[in-house]
Every structure is written in structure tokens, then in C-alpha cells.
Length: 191
Image (tube, rainbow, N blue to C red; front, side, top):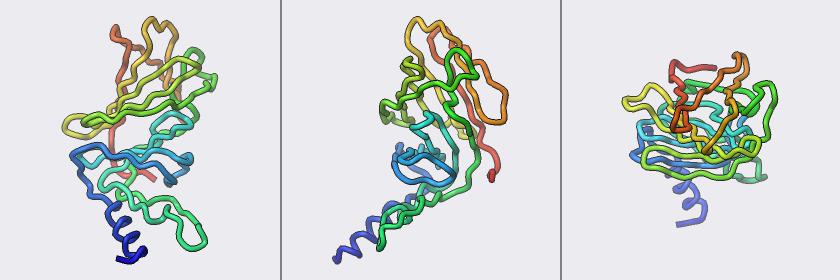
């Protein structure tokens, strides 16, 4: 098989079906203003999302197939384009550093520190003004929403906020187990 046929076969294998039995991750050049090297994550059941490691937040969610990676693989001239989403965007979140500690008006320093794959979820790790955070993302049983469980360190006494563009700050009150859950409903396609 020639190198170009091998590349074509590889890229064809990257155009993935809509329903996986496991979590899949791809990092690269994604559309809709995502930061370079954002994460594209395919969850079981055909729900996919973009996690931006610069702002440490979910940027958008799409349903159906995952990605066509061919446009972001450089060809002649090494010109790259964003990967193509294989389904409609059904949820968006915009704004700098959506998770904030203390003053909701102050944009915190967020630092992405890694991720771990789970059976039906992915857990991202990052810090918000030095406080370690773990955020597990999965699909609600039966579908219909992206469920994000955010864990904080022991003895955390600061107020936490979710700040998204175009919405008032939302105070987040962790329970006794030092975590809270955010649900992002998946609706009709959005522009």
C-alpha cells in the first residue's frame, strides 16, 4: 500500500460512528473559536463536546458522529483547517474561565493539569487560583444532558461561581461531599 493510500485509510478510520461504547479523545484544531489543542471528546451514546484547556471549560456540545479529522492534517502547503464536526452543535458556553472562586467578577488564573479516562466519562484536572479542581463529564443516563461533577479540595471555604457570557453569575454550593453537579441540557441545534 502506498503512503498516500495508508494516509487515506487512516483518515477514513478517524471519521467515526455516532455511538461509541467507550470514551474517545482527540486533541487538535477544532472549529467555533476553540483554543489550539482543545479536546474533542466522544462519550457513549453519540454525545460529543469540546473542552478548552485554556479557559478550563466546556465550549460546546454536539450530537451524532464525532469528527472528520482530514481537514486538520496538513497536506501540500501544510495549510490546516479545523476538524469537521459530524453532527449539529446543541449547546454552547462562552466566557473566560467559567468556574471562579471568591469574586465572580475577577477572572481567575486557571491552569490545566491533565485528564483521566473513565468507563463512561472523562475527568479533567485543573487549578483555579491555585485551588485544585477535578471535573468529571459524562452523559445523563438516558441522554438529554451533559452532566459535570466538580470536586473541590477538603476544607474549601471559598464561594464558587459559574460565570458565562450573557448570564448573571451563578453561585455554586458544594455539598458535604465537597462537590456539585452541573447539567447542561442538550436541545435543538444552535448557531
